[in-house]
Image (cartoon, rainbow, N blue to C red; front, side, top):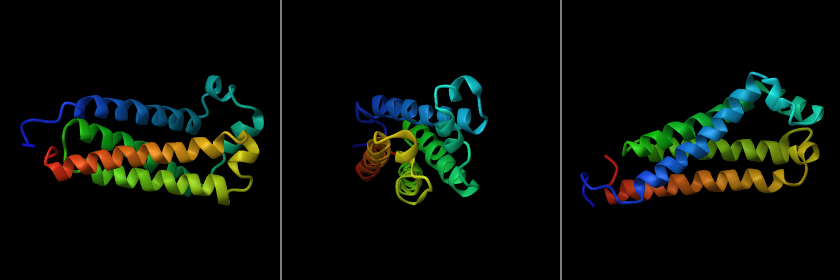
Length: 144
């Protein structure tokens, strides 16, 4: 693989990563700013839960979603920094998932239901896939 010929799948995967992470950013912004039309989709207990995270968890959440978006954009532009940023975002998402599922009081599954026990690990898995993909491209020399 040369620096001048990206693999055919780089751009479709990067666009998918951008869209995935953009959805997380939208969710983050809407929740942080308490935009009512979105929050009315939740029960009052759920809205209260997601809008009352400790500041450090809000920071971890921000690193997960905004880091994921930055990493995806860097991947699109074939930047060698993409794997590093995506690794940071993946780690932040993992910390967020562990906190929400195992440390938070109440746990997210008590507020949202059992689906959260699948959704959060799935989000971590998706972040891991994007990181591993970017890392493999970096090793192949497709990222500069």
